Length: 249
Image 1: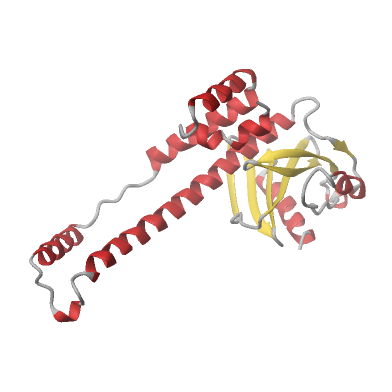
Image 2 (image 1 turned 90 degrees about the horizontal axis):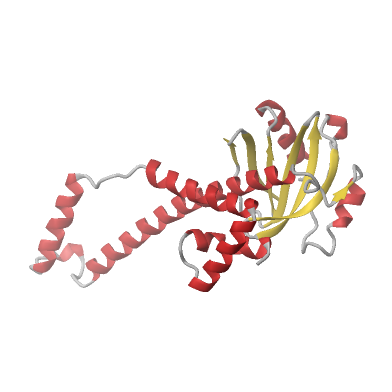
């Protein structure tokens, strides 16, 4: 299996949802690919962190008492007329429980997804710094970099040059993030490199975080997702993100 094939199924692999044959194929690839193995290790560490650190809340005693009273009342069919038909109330309770569970899954799942995205972006950034991995097209000309993605991706990223602001464009490459092909635009600030990942969707919530010594910022604009990662100092990194936002309206 190739890296892009493996990364499409890594979430299922980590969660133990793959069939035996596919799991064996992934494991064989991981033994020979430190980059993909690193992503799996990061995902497992993140999942473990969520399990250990997410707060767990017990239902208040008053709520438990109220539910027990309602159940006893329902069993005895002692429902006042103003509470509605007894056949409706169990469905209402079940519906409410479903809504609460769905909301919890949404917030926890969204946070988990964002965390996995950041972990994967950092791994991709580190891997890109290895010799020969940083760029597929090396050019400081945005009019050379942007056309290079045509035919390689099913979208056209906005490419801006920030050389006058101290963040020159170096080039770009095709990468994989969140199980899909993305554009990775490479910028530089003195001896520091910045990877700016771009892909369509417009569904990434704005967030800033530090992870494993790297700054990460995510946002969406005009139907596109953006994720920047670098080891720059926070002030300079935020300056870069602000400049990209300004020129990608």
